[in-house]
Amino acid sequence: MKTLQAIAAELQGYDPQALSAAGARDFLLRLVEPVTQTEEVDIFSALGRVLARDVTSPISVPPHDNSAMDGFAFDGSQLAPDRPLQLKLLGTALAGKAWSGAVAAGECVRIMTGAVMPRGLDTVVPQELASIDGDQVTVAANALQAGENRRLLGEDLLQGSAALHQGQLLTPASLGLLASLGLSQVTVLRRLRVAYFSTGDEILSLGEAPREGAVYDSNRYTVFGLLTRLGCEVIDMGVVRDEPALLEAAFNRAALQADAIITSGGVSVGAADYTKLMMKQLGDVAFWKIAMRPGRPMAVGRIGQAVLFGLPGNPVAVMVTFLAFVRPALLQMMGSAATELPLLRAHSTQAIRKKPGRTEYQRGIVSQGANGSLQVQVTGNQGSGVLSSMVQANGLIVLDHAQGNVAAGEAVNVMMFDGVI
Image (cartoon, rainbow, N blue to C red; front, side, top):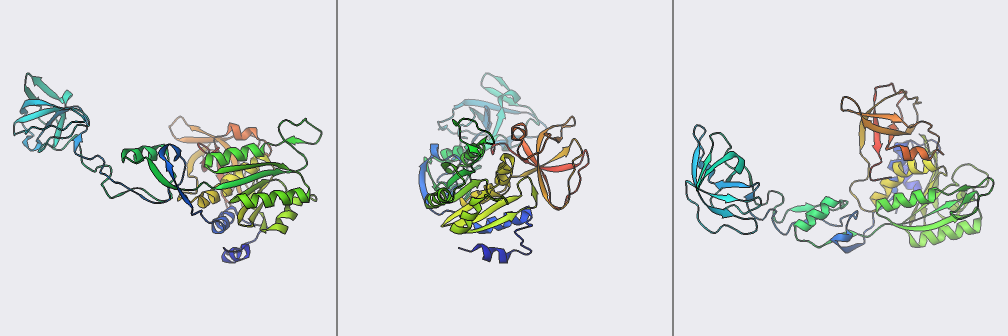
């Protein structure tokens, strides 16, 4: 396990007092290590879990050549481009039961979607493209080509091939794929355990009476939602007051039971920030000033074996730093092969002021423009305490470190919220 000093030595130009967003991500991905413990879970409990090893297909899917539609199956070598094909209808092949008879040249079988293709037949003419008169079926000239409308054995997956790969997050489609292979259980990495708490004497828990100078804690519930969406095992430790003994007890308790600790508040330059003092005392911790907006102050490191993420106190800054830095790091700890959210390109509907030298994450609303392309507009006030703007937005406009002002109509990167917030 590398120390923070060793990781910093690997990074060119590392400066904790003026760290770029890209530098912060790079540092964190060197800091965290994936869990290794695995467990077998039922397919109904596998959604959102990370696959611990490749899943090898025990069967071929489909297990036999079959019809892609309702129609008539025949030997396609009889087709000629300049004349219709006359075929004698022998009977019907139904899905779930193989046709047992022989089909000779000049003959065909009515076939249902999914039914096994009779031996020697490779083509299906859809019933709407065929003419039927008693037991005579006519296929018009140029209606189709040999081999059409047949699904091949193993067309989806061949027996012995990798159906799913280690590190994949299991999605609803993944569950369907596992079921199509006849698998009721799957081996996944254990859930990541994350403890989190808010800090500050000014923070009110729900149910407490309002008092002057105090605010209700929103970060605790936002972080809970973000971690739950990510599939973590969440350990809610509530609100911890700015008292050294209480903070020490909270950090020690969190480090004993969690893989990662997330705090909000207490990492800026305030005079009463006992949180920073306790982090330094108990662990190997660095305090960053990241060249970004919102969310400049952040603490990272370890307390015991647990990775620590000390986030700012403002609600929007908590969510932005979580999406930009914590989420990718946690996904890597979960063993996921995919850690970064994809960025879409959308045209800004308005000019956006931006100073080069920092990365900005502005709340935006992405929609489809009149010409069908994506467009994005800023939600309005971009203050880091304007929590309602995160509800209005469906993504973050990501303006890179070296980027300057954005002109109306210019394309920008957008990190979408769907499935994340």
